[in-house]
Length: 388
Image (tube, rainbow, N blue to C red):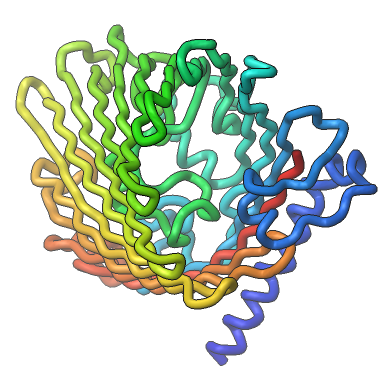
């Protein structure tokens, strides 16, 4: 009966996701009826070979739908604790839908833009701490203009709302290795910023970025101070990428006294076309009423691309919150995840995942009482398209 139920839910997930994206894609399809359909590689890596659409004139138009089913051993009535986006128990859920239009600045056309609309439960979670009262802001994941300054190899300046530079994972599951988001993504770093940033490729091996923003997860500033960030991307050889981020600023509401610092490091190694490794370390510190608080964590990933259409991705991580600043309790959280990824033609991606979360204190709510761990099983169905 359990197998029959899971198969039924998988079929419903696939039909729901495909139908939703088909609806989102209707305007683009009407403009490009003569274009050939995108193949799987095009759909999953749109920047590498999106189909030409003459009416777009250098712009890229894209869309994404994300639907999931997750079963939690703790059977939470609302959102599962310490999780992002795949938070609801034992029900088919719509996580997010996106539509985006972008134009990268070039030497021939120096102005650019990035506008991404995000809908669904994920959008509400991302913007839960936004100080601005305008409800429409929760549906705008990114909205910024760009200009490529003719300096050296090109200095790109962006102004507006953009996703954070921190972390090994991003908001869209299709661009991550696992379906569920890590503890570090959910608890250690921000989602987005609003302000100005400048990016410069100093050499083929070194890229620099700096920004001045309103703070963590804010379009409207929540205090009188700004935050500044810096990033260095090193690529010593083609198989290795090292990203080092630092950000500091006043982040607490109506507080320009307690200064927050965040150090974020990501290393990715691809020794072969079949095997990739990644590690992410975060350390943050702040103060509350003049008393110091801190948190830190590390995550490790392994991706084995067994075939062009199937991969296995384990992830393990530890997050220490000795002052209860990010999780609400003095504790150390751990999790281990194993994900099976299946790629199909036409932009359809399926991930099947088992995850185990644990704490050294009873942090997970259960109808019978708090417990120190929870298990979850998830099926995520994602469909994306992109036209250039």
